[in-house]
Length: 280
Picture 1: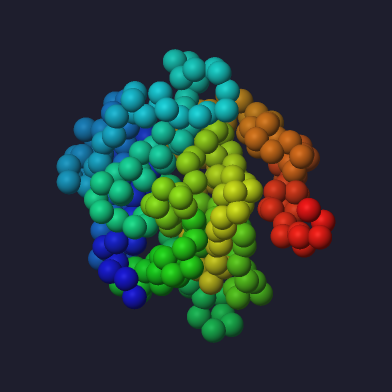
Picture 2: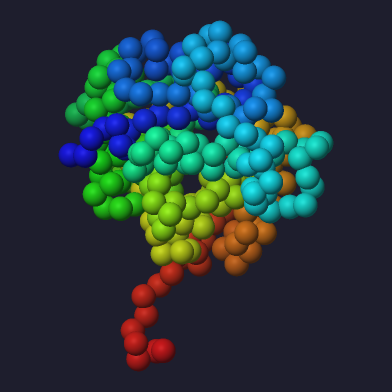
């Protein structure tokens, strides 16, 4: 098993939410591993983050420089429209590389609890930070051993007792990412960046996997101020789906789901196929 310091550091990406529920959750369970909150220098609430969590826990990147190199898949600029999470996600990878790490975790800032399966029972909320850190390390080591671009675990809406032994081919939220230049998939798009990152990973012949034996609970979408909430409220889920369609029009279409517009992906049209040489 590789040194946890090289693969298991948690970076919580956050903006305008100095209360940071994920940090609260990790603190509450006495999480023993390394974790930090990553903020751009365009965030006026950084002093509040530092006051709440200590200056040593807050890592600040140059948002103004990072956004210059961010592919948001549009030409709207960032003066009036938020940039989304792409700048902080790509900056986090650079921070992790500079720290000498081989992989790193990217968590969102709205996790209220972490849950595990035990036998055939329902999920139970873990209050043992050591146990949670051990599970994260197992996933990170698995990702390292198979050289996966991304491994993770499920959200509460994707994980149930009957699916606890199953896995998905897309990481929805908590990402343990490969730092190697050839394996890391650069984040793109102002909205729907997680889906687009997964499609980009698979279409390039790389792979990712998310396991259902553990899950995180998080706040309902758009229920908290800060983060990407203002973008979604201003532009809605039609715009969110549009980014995925622009990126992979042959595989994504707009549908109605859960009482709102949503995307539907035909993954067979995304993942490369191995074809016998006789069909060359």
